[in-house]
Length: 447
Ligand SMILES: [Zn+2]
Image (cartoon, rainbow, N blue to C red):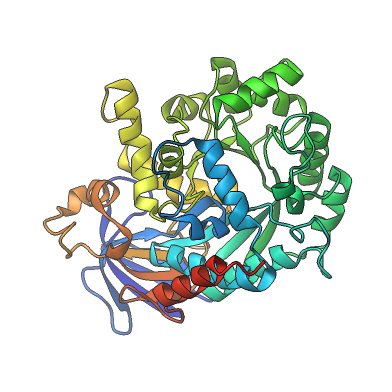
């Protein structure tokens, strides 16, 4: 058993509570006691504000190698970025992916992320041929999360078409399983474990037709698996789907049986009022990825309208333009301020809930994301003594952290009862050095 005394801790309400003793046993929280004036003997003192672990609900780990390299000099669009991404994707193999994803997930750990939802569509050899184990790349990603000390939900994505009604292009061949039944058969072979789940994803309606989307949705529902899909990220996607099927992507997914409480729409940027009603009526989660959406020029999602309609919100680092859950959570608010001219649209506690409990739930971890007896023992301590947060008033600590904290302020991370970040450093991985080496190896063009 371990004991942690938190100077301040967020237990779900507002404001944060002073003097909280958290006892853990194995991977779970055993007890939580507020109003404990000083650390009892044997308890580790956590100075600052302690939060539940963050859930990064939408990640493509390999895209970490694009950071800074995919900023266009002289114009460009989402579609130009995608071409660069395909070149990188073509160089990934199970060994170099393990190295890159392990370092990327360790960077996430340093930022307080204890669970990642890896939206995985790199399945096969670059020419579409199978590896000896057809899940070699997915298994490498799962091993990478284990090395970094975080939990993972591998959201294995069905990706069949190169665009609506188009065959896969050369750069997309390794994403495809041929048809949805073959996708399901491959995914079915991947076992789950205590710290990893296997969920399903419909890459998008650009890549999966309505019939195949229905097959994926049925497979997910039958197994009680989370189901995610990129939805209405770009206007061109909406136009292509409307032209082909006469309905918006959200309506097509609803008809395919995908919209339910274990469904997560990723981005959900360009929605009609009816789309918002459909998603809210299903209590579908909406995962916004504001730093990527900004980076790619996608647009500003309707976070408040979706929440009011009944959608829990989550956040994701998506393209890894940055890995900063504070910025993702905070951006939900200032982006809305820019779009609406109003302030105070989401409370700090609502933004933190998106980054913690609601994010975990959409990845199938309903027992994580809150500091509460019986939950997984994930604790993220944000030091308040550094230059960004010095002067924080305890009664405004949530707002200070949501609106001003950054990953270097994270001092300690406990993930499933194990300390994986201590003194601001990962306990077993030299994150900068491993990222350098992994990205340099890919630049060499190993495939
Ligand atoms: Zn994505």
